[in-house]
Image 1 (cartoon, rainbow, N blue to C red):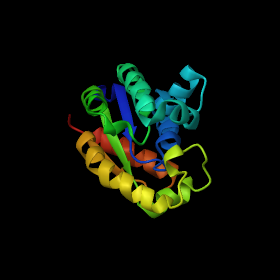
Image 2 (cartoon, helix red, strand yellow):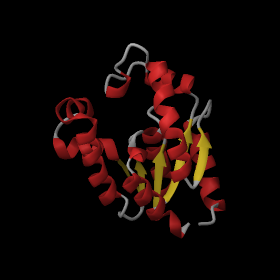
Image 3 (cartoon, rainbow, N blue to C red):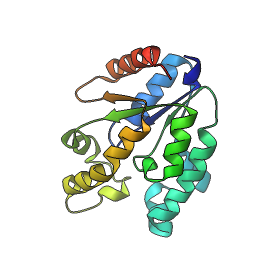
Image 4 (spheres, one colour):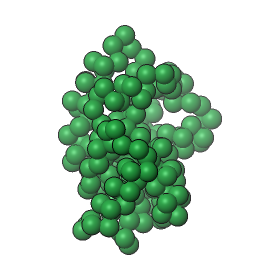
Length: 174
């Protein structure tokens, strides 16, 4: 798995990127970084506040800078924000610098996993289901374009998903 010096998890909010990424990194004895947490730590502000102050575009610019830097680190499992694929530069960096795994889940599952999370500015809306449909209509093709491997996280335990990822990585030909 020499190409797997960088394993990058992409997918919608609620797909399990952070939870699965932490466990995957631990299993593979690699470092783990969540790009959203990294942005919060560098700015001293949470994501909703950054969205309030700088808008989505301001946040996306910060995200692009962090992704450019993190995607060059070695021995890293990187969990990205759900909208990371919106910028072509991010898609290119991620695809070229690591093995990108798209964690896929159905909208109902995503809603179930995110319904109590107030740290998701795009879901603070009257109709989160409709918002997920809109987001996925734009992002799903970008996730598929960027990813080397797609893993469905539906109804799977964290350990089962991690084992499926490791198996897919072992069989992956870059």
